[in-house]
Each structure stands twice: as structure tokens, then as C-alpha cells.
Length: 234
Image (tube, rainbow, N blue to C red; front, side, top):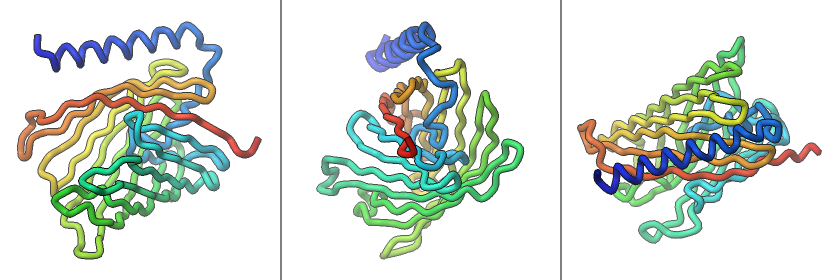
């Protein structure tokens, strides 16, 4: 068995073990997922309640903050505390709930970021995005689209996202987030487990990126994230 396969099997076993241990103390955990406003990083069509927020450490190294200004408006942001190609990478975004009716909802907004890739010199760009979805007490499915502009040009790429959340218990959920970016010629896929408690949540998953114009995976890496939920209305 290859080292990569052994690592992935070990990671999935760890996720299962952690999920079982949380299930043994169900009374300590709320049934509402405080991170339902996002998949791993991509927004869903759900917003944070007013005065609620989370502080997230994506890949245990990238700090992000998310806050519900009002029930219909969420702001998010994050940065790398280290440089990549001599650049500190950042993003900031705001999403506004456009409609919410019988489980169907939609969010539209703007995002600014320099996470545009080395081929573009990590130039800052402004993106518009929209996400629509259907959410129940058990699961949510979401689809989004985005396009951007920079100081030097209009982005020639269209960004599509599909994903979902499926609750397997009152405090565990399967999460998947998948990206299709026309300009990069590669696609991204991810799946993992989210576990949440009263204020803390953890995610353990797998990210995979395909080779250009191929369904063969070029990169496979773990996804690990921790987040802390807070409520400023208390």
C-alpha cells in the first residue's frame, strides 16, 4: 500500500474515532451547527445570526473571522501570517441574504482578495458572487458562481462551486466543497467531517486538485480546521 493511501486511511480512521467520542457526550453539544454559513471556506446561502461570530484557524495556520452584523448580513476576512512568494495573502468579503423562503435561500455579495495565483502576480481583485441553496434541519445543498475584476484586467475566469452539508448526528456533519475554475483548467474537490460543541468546532477532511484538463488527481492534502463561536449579545 502506498504512503499516500496509508495516510488517507489513517486520517479517515481518526475522523471516525473522534466522531464516536463526541457521540458519547451528546448532551454537551448544541444541535445547531454554528458554522452552517460556510462549507470549508466557501459561503453557503445561510448567514450568521446577528451579533454571532466565529474565529477560525484554517489549516491550523490561517486566522479568519466571521461575524453576523444583522441576521441578513455577514462579513468575513482572513490572511496568511506568513508570506507566499513574498506576499501576505488576504481576503475580505460581505454577503447579504437576498431571499429566504421555505428552506430556499440566496446570498449575494462582494469579495476582495489577492489570492489570485502566482501566474497573475498575486494581484488584488474584486469579485462578485452569488450562492443559492436549500437547507433543512438535516442537510443543505448549495451552488455558487463568481467573477472578478482587477486593476489590470477583467478576470477571464468563471468560478463555480457546488457543495453541501449532511448532519449525521446532533453534532457531526459530512461536508463537501467542490470548485470548478475555468481559467486554472484544474478542479478542486473536498470532503470531510465537522464536529462541533458549545463553542468549539473542528473539521478533518481531504482536499484533492486535478491535473489540467484531466480527472486525475495532481495534489491530495489534508484539511484541518478549528473554530471558536462567540455571541456579543450576551
